[in-house]
Length: 65
Figure 1 (cartoon, helix red, strand yellow):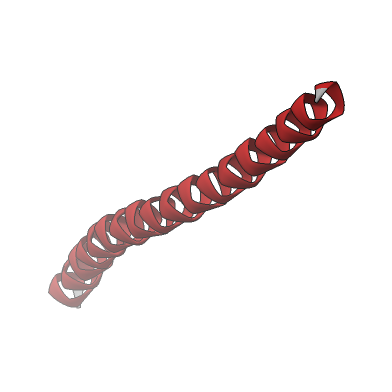
Figure 2 (tube, one colour):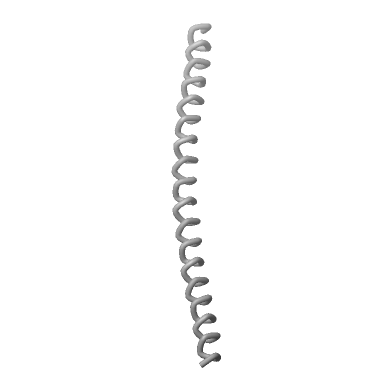
């Protein structure tokens, strides 16, 4: 009976360790996906702002003509 209890405790420790590593990998993957999404959003926003500024500049130049 004692051997079964020791085996059960050991299995629980192994399962906890494996799930901890798996959870860490999932977190890394989620962070990578989040990073890609944020970079895409920033790039998209940056392009829109650049176009907006260029349009404003063009309108200002056209007013001087």
